[in-house]
Image (cartoon, rainbow, N blue to C red; front, side, top):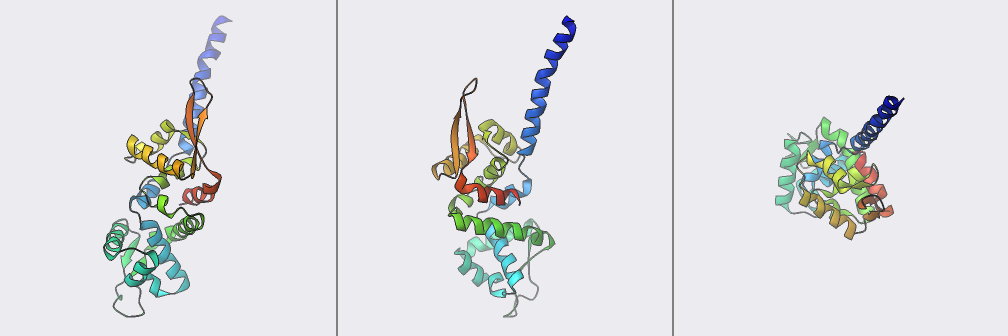
Length: 212
C-alpha cells in the first residue's frame, strides 16, 4: 500500500512537467515570423506588393511608388528588397523597364505570405502600432504572447533558439509595456513572479501576427 502511494506521488510531478511542456510548445514562434521581423520594412513591403498584385496597380510595385507609399528611403528599400529576395519572397520583374510593368513581384512563397503580411500591416496602422512593429523582436514576442500570458522564462524558451538574447527580449517587452501594448502583471504565486499578457488594444495585432 505504501509503495502504491509513493508511486502515485512520483507520477504527479511528471504530469505537471508534461502539461508545462505542452503549454510551452503552444508558444513556439515559427522561424518565418522571426525572419519577417528581422528588417523593419519587410512586412510592409510584402503587404504593398500583395496589394499591387490584387488591385492590378503596378505603381505600388515600382521603386518610386514603394518609396512614396511606405515613406522610406531608396537605400532602405534596396536593402529590404535584397533581404526579401534572399529569403525567396520577392524577385525583380524581368520586364521592369516597361513603364507599366512592376519593378518587383512576389514569388510563390511570397504570395502565400502576402495576405497575412497585408493583414498585419493594416492592423498595425489601424491601432497605431507601426513604430513598435518595426522593431526586431516585438513581433516575435507578440507571437509568443498570442498563445496566452507568459513569464520571461517562457518567452526566452520560445525565442532563445532563434537568437534572441535576454537583453533583446527585455528591450522588446519594455517597449511593448511602455506603449501599453502588453500588460505586466505580478503573479501571487510561490514564489511570486511576473507574467506578460497582450493588452486589449493589441489583441487584433497579436492575432494577425499569429496567422503569419
